Image 1 (tube, rainbow, N blue to C red):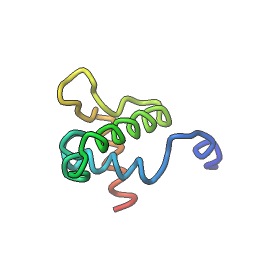
Image 2 (tube, rainbow, N blue to C red; image 1 turned 180 degrees about the vertical axis):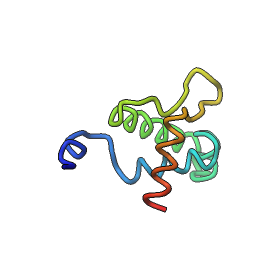
Image 3 (cartoon, rainbow, N blue to C red; image 1 turned 135 degrees about the vertical axis):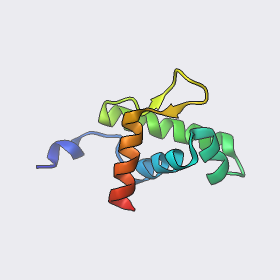
Image 4 (cartoon, one colour; image 1 turned 30 degrees about the vertical axis):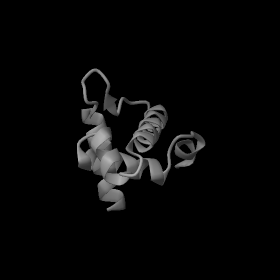
Length: 88
């Protein structure tokens, strides 16, 4: 039943945790400064990469890159809420 779900790459608990941190903080930059205060630029790059990988896996836009700072799309917010509920 779940075989197709696990055949793709890009999904991990770590990536989902990052999504939740981004949603809770209100954006990648703020989440990076809260989670990785020693090197927020590196953490921001990691978050960005992880979100791109989740977007590839789920085939949705999680971040709206047409606004500054980037914000979660409605689908991204929905995925973050579901992740909070499942992993909460």
